[in-house]
Amino acid sequence: MWAASCLASCCASCTCGLCTSAVAGISNRSARIAYCGLFGLSLIISWILREVAAPLLEKIPWINTYTHTPPKEWFQTNAVLRVSLGNFIFFVVFALMMIGVKDRNDKRDAWHHGGWTVKILVWALLIVLMFFLPNIVITIYETLSKFGSGLFLLVQVVILLDFLHTWNDAWVEKDEQKWYIALLAVSVVCYLAAFSFSGVLFIWFNPSGHDCGLNIIIIVMSMILAFGFGIIALHPQVNGSLLPASVISVYSVYLCYSGLSSEPRDYECNGLHKHSKAVSTGTLVLGMLTTVLSVLYSAVRAGSSTTFLSPPSSPKSGSRRPLIGSNEIEEGKEEKKEKEGSRVSYSYTFFHLIFALASMYSAMLLTGWTSSTSGSSELIDVGWTSVWVRICTEWATAVLYIWTLVAPLILPDREFS
Image 1 (cartoon, rainbow, N blue to C red):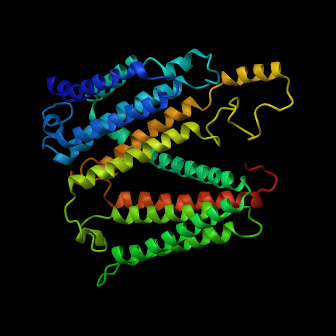
Image 2: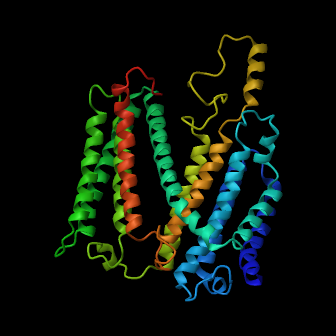
Image 3: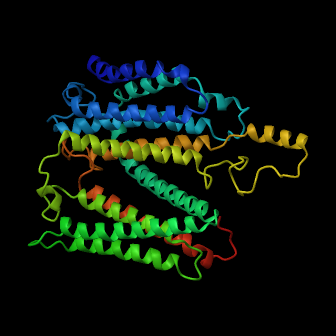
């Protein structure tokens, strides 16, 4: 009991001390950044416990319930999952509490933006309590996390597509030659990068003297998809643009690389292992930082997306026409502005739900998407499960993007905005 309390509360209490010192400066506008900071701190705690918690967890009777003590990696995974579960519960509770919030006059709006001292204490308490749960609960959460992580990856893809279409529309609406040239230039550069990098992948993941048919198929499919994106987007009957197609092509090739680089280090077709037989601390830190930035961007972008996150009453949702007509009288204009100013600008529930799914996703990255009985303490996001998660995400990205192009043709009676 004492070991568990020391283990969980040590990191959590240090985190509370850092957080509460900045609570007074958190305003409504910076609340989203504060949630991001809290989430980032949970990842740091997971990282620390992953490295140092195993000897302590071995001494806790309700965690080490086995006749033969499991390997060190099992306890490392268990610690990461427990922190992730506490984080998940925290954001899920807030997501449920914020259901139906459409107006800033709702008292729950103050719960979302304020009360940070209480929030941080509750968050820390949840993380500590997770270390008192039986292993069966953690096992169930681990299984659910794999599905939640897949859902988070799909949300990332939707957010990316939303961003690309917004970017393209913003430049096209300027209706100036220099912006059309910029669109073409960015598109050409992206396509050159995509196909050039695909050639590099053949060198890295198809070493001579080995039968690497699977890697070749995956790389060739990525190139075919990239070529197909451009062909479909430029078809006369499709209302597409080359910019989104080119950026999606780069992203698809990146996912291909990310998947192949996650192949086991002893796999003969993973040519990268020849250049780095051991994973350095710097490489791990860089990989973790990239993961954190990706997760945090997705959450912030989700909170401000105008496609599927803004509530129906939000001035961001629906049409992009001006909110106030130019011919309105001054009194009516001020009244309407005041009314719209009281509405929330994004879905609080979806915002917290993104963080909950991101908690699952980050736990899977730190544990390599594998079961608690396998893996290496020196590797992050490595293994065949990681490979196929990345490759399937690439294919899902392709399907979703192609659907956004052909859907208006297949369903002409429906409006796609």
